[in-house]
Amino acid sequence: MIISELKESFENQISGIYTNSEISELFSIFCTQILGINRFELRRSEDHIISDEQNSVFIKIITELKAGKPYQQILGETEFYGLKFFVDENVLIPRPETEELLELAITEIQKNNVTDLKIVDIGTGSGIIPIVLKKKFPEAKVSAIDFSEKALKTAKKNADFHEADINFIHQNYLEEYLLEVYDIIISNPPYIGIDEEKEIADSVKEFEPKMALFSPTSNALIFYEKIAEDSDNHLIENGMVFLEINQKLGEETKALFTNVLSEVHLIKDISGNDRFVFGRK
Ligand code: GLN
Image 1 (cartoon, rainbow, N blue to C red):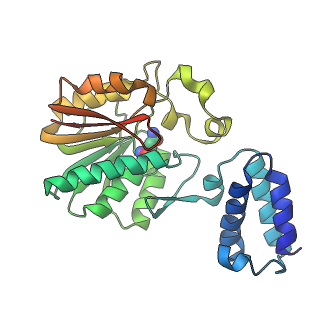
Image 2: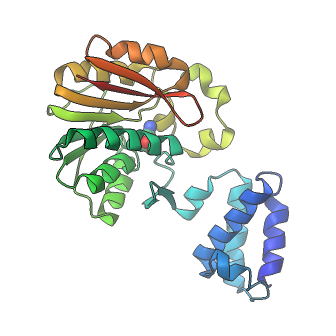
């Protein structure tokens, strides 16, 4: 089998699931990983012969893609904030909105000119938030909490890969208190309400961890209520809170913080949806 034949078979088999441009992007991503041929070389390697082993790897990938498995999980990695992160079935695949959350946080933190901050990320998943912050602010003391031991394992692998010194804490956040008083609380907690489940793509529900997506109770704001309580008791004066939120619950989420923080803003993402709450004590 040569590459052009493989490409044709790849395209034909997943054409109903992905758009043409996504298919060509995916094909080049997998060729880079499996054949070691990058996008540029690929154009000149159409008659390059692939081995039976390589072909069988592609057959497996196509089967997984057809089943709706996210390509990032098949690859075992993804790019976030220009960096490589390992992902698996135990962590949420990083979303572009979270890059915006980090940009917002980094901009606000930089305005203050204080870098030896105590930061905590609640519900860290793959660890993207604390790792990006630690790389940006090496003097900060960064902690990250998650309830899932499996997620923490992946987060630690990412932190090791990036040589980021993060204090990972295994904790049932909703039931326990924060251990310290922080300068910054940041979080992208599970915020999809049970009633919204039908709006979520099947592949997301089937392959990504439910506990990372859905609120554990019928109250979609349960994490935000606890974070508001902690902002009262475990955040220093002038400390800041950065949250990614459910776009349908913008005003409700903001309202939880108006009595606790002196300044609270509801901020839209680049798609124009209410997506972040930023506050200062
Ligand atoms: N903090 C991680 C992220 O933003 C995980 C979020 C989650 O699992 N809800 O991707």
